[in-house]
Amino acid sequence: MGQYYRPVIEKNNKPIAIDTYLNGEYECAKLMEQSWYTAEYVNAVSELLYNKPRQIAWVGDYAISVADKFPNVPVELLFETAYGDNSTPIQSLKTTDFSLGDKYLVNHDTAEFINLNKYYQENLASDGYCTHPVSLLTAIGNGQGGGDFLYHAQSEEQVNNVGKWAWNTLEITDTEPKGYKEVMYHFIED
Image (cartoon, rainbow, N blue to C red; front, side, top):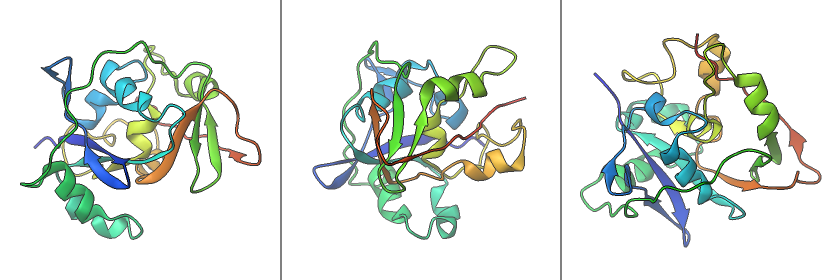
């Protein structure tokens, strides 16, 4: 059965779910349906991190089943925020021209960053597609349902890195952060 995802972002020191609608239209919500470099929905979510450090997680509707794999992440709270009876998601996002080109994805909790131009070059598959680092690095629940990043990954290491930055404080910037370590992750589907 398919697993559906909804991003949760910190706003005013509390988690807020982001609706899976863009311009009022439903966006496909399986992880790999949302995890392409040029996907309008994931770029609209990513723009919320542009020069605004915030905690973020891409929460699957089976996330509770893997909560023990995220000991430092409040998985139950994030799940309740995304799917609970009292969740109040941010209303539908609008299409934006925001892109990851010439930018850096910064993890302030680990003092690391990804040069997104290099990420694109190293993750561009032979079919011309590139995966999106924000949704994959922050996903909670990967491997629990159809549409996850699992079945066509090039290596187990790639699968194990999904969710590595879940609920970390991330920011997208135009400048390389000083004193932070540059890192690279690969999420290439065969």
